[in-house]
Image: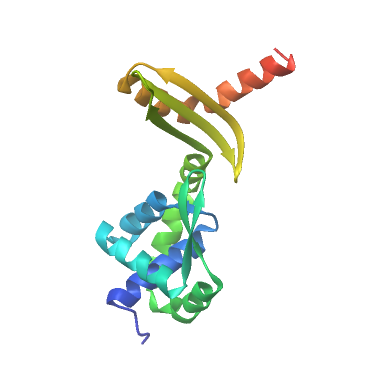
Length: 176
C-alpha cells in the first residue's frame, strides 16, 4: 500500500505539481485559484507554502507585465519527481482536469491586462494592453471621468480586444 503525503509536505508537493502540470506560467491569482478549487487549500496556507517553496529554492517568482508568476526551478522538479507519487491519483487527476478546463481563460488573463490610475485634476487613466509573452502587441491609454466607466472598459477589454485590434490594424494598414 502506498504512503500518501499529509500536512505541509502534501501542500508543498501539491503546489509543485500544479506548476508542473500547468505547462505555462500562472499568475499568483491563477495559481491560488487552482490550488483552492482543486485541493481546497486556503489563502493563508497557500501564501505560507509558496514562501517556503521560494525560500527553499523549489520555485522562483518572476515579475511579468501581467503580474508576478511562480515557476518551478530545477530543484523543484527534482523534489516533485521524488514525492509526486505521494499524492493520490485522484488528486493529481483533479488538478490536471482543472488546469485543462481553465487553460484558455488563464491564457487570456495573461494576454489581456488592464489597470487604472488617478489623473491629476480628477478622473482616471485606463491602460489596456494586449501581450504576447513579454512583448506588448497593443497598448491603449484612455482618460475617463468615473470609476464606473473605468470598470466597464476594463471588463469589455476581455471580450472586445480582438475586434478592436483588428479594427485598428485594418484602419492603419489601409485594409478597411
